[in-house]
Length: 273
Image 1 (cartoon, rainbow, N blue to C red):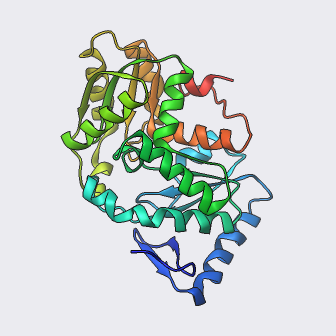
Image 2 (cartoon, helix red, strand yellow; image 1 turned 60 degrees about the vertical axis):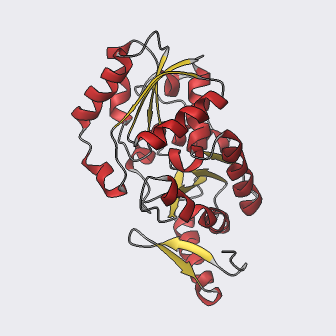
């Protein structure tokens, strides 16, 4: 359904609120006042699938950058769930730009890869046109991270079910990578992603890599998985670079701001100049 230019998105308690024109100004003003309170730090806008709050990893990695997030209200990590939120992405980008975002990242790996590489590029174009700002997606970010370390043959550990894994494999192949193995945790309900324990994820991802034939990198895919403190342990266990959705989407977004995204202590990609 096409919305009028007066409709926008704003954060709610785990849901999207479609604003009428008469309250849009107050929503933008609220975001803008927060941005002004950030003491002129560069502002990166995050279009989030589920959580309206900024992930804590953002401040850990880039304390000199201000982040604002808007949710599109994703309910299930399935193609049907992704279809329902696509038309909310461009309005969210416009709202973030109106609040002062200097660049925008679409978070949610599967939300941007599930229709293939060409559609990921189309989503990026829509965000740029709606916002007038540089833009990227989480799927583009993980590909950039993999290319930065010369990866070609991938072991892929995900949160997804078999169908979403199949679509990720197609996307990665379209982007020029060879998927040696891909395995998922079978998560579909977005609330279930929070139940994935750190040690379980570490063990699962390492086992996926160890089952691969001569993979030269490990990709851990799903922005809801908390992987920042797993990057170094996984690289130590596997002996190859590890790229994961959330940390490397933040890395890519900060680079869009024209800043150095180099951070030591969180794996090979983030340690690069």
